[in-house]
Length: 638
Image (cartoon, rainbow, N blue to C red; front, side):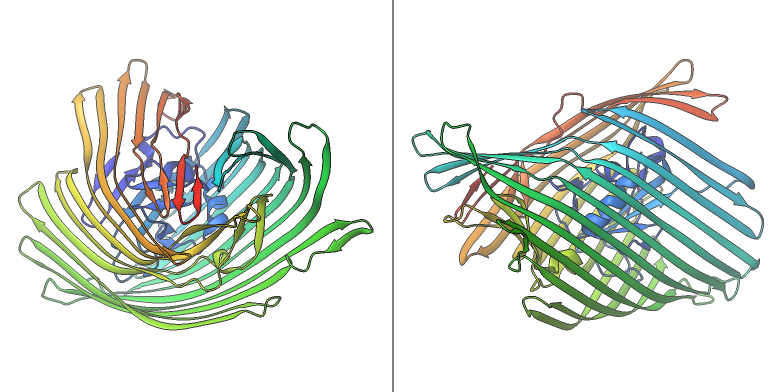
């Protein structure tokens, strides 16, 4: 299931029973990867992670990325590569590293493909289906896939906050019904042995209808009811994304000299409408009074254009190889939100909450790397330079933020063969995470009467220093020691107004976040019909930053473990039992409590292994839940 290579760990998804799962759920099975309460991906304890598809950037972040990964079925994935210190040829984005999702592609000559259909039931029903086709000849390769899903889900959020002598207990329930579609198509043509031209198109769409209700109960210091507030908040939304890639590869000779070029265009958009109906109740009363009604209409569009060129040059007669390249990307973001308030004379614009925002960013980069083999030692070093120019502007507030900076990002890789089956590897790099475009938008978006989300146009990019030391025996990771230090790490910070009782979550730059982790694991065959994949790790995380003028320091030891057991049974049956546990740890300024899950699956091969029927039971004991504590400044919440 897990392979340890020189510079990356590989999760072989095809070895898993992925019945009914999405790409987002598969990422949780990768060592060092977790999801926070909003399904944002974290790697090595950091939110600064870049997601790639088949070695190419998705150019998506935040909700757009989550939506796409939920629409991508796990059955379409071959591998997930975890790269903590990517080489200089890759973008420097991602302070914690890169997760590269490799999709399945048919390699057989002629026409081949797979079809998948699944149905499931949790609190509500889920269903999906799709197909993945390929057609290969000696010069032409065509491939395509389409997947559709109906997902009816249950979500509940319980927040308890102490504000001075009062206790606020909020129970939010939302029931989104989502319809998702994802597609991909591509072609590669080789007119001769040295030339390859390719094109890829991918995209997806999602519509969501989410009835949402919230009830906030207030009790005083003596535990007596002090009132309650109910909110009905129906929401509808639509997301769409599409990306086009054109690529060309030219092999200059048979020695390995190669020139390649890529051009990308990506566009994604979101639209959301919602209404807010607030009802207030006096203590011990069931008589409601109108506490205000609002409605909102929100939209955003992001366009990304990028072009890059790469050159590989082995030096004849030596073991040295050089790589060089350059890249430019242009990003354009437009967002708008309009609020209306119901007055006695009808709906009126709420100008205090209405806003328009635009953001433009240009990143220009170049790199050079050099590698060689000196006996048992493989050595590679690289240097990448990136210049960023960005302008963020709010038409309503008049805020305008201009950033112009240049950064160098060195990387180094050493791999030493201790013997035929033993390797010692050391890698290090310096990296950057630029703010997600949505996080720069200063819109104020209420999730209930006492909780709001707001972007921050003054966010600075976070930077990191990363080191990883690996020792492997065959494909077994004897140990992996990882050090990650981030400055200006981007995380949510809660600001509580004791007068209005409203808590606003704002993305902020934390002064410093450091994570030191140690892990070990690999594959073991216990008997001919019983094998297991185990992974265990421990970490120490420290976050230090000022909040509202006060110093905050969070530090915690944590550990995690996972174990997957595969049993080969008679009649072509395969039983898999997998468990996962994560102890309490630090996520930004959250302290999370422990969580875990136990899954059981059974797969039956049919028709000479041309088909399979799978049954999977997930999270048998209902323990895979996010639980956290916020306790700093004037915040005291669980």
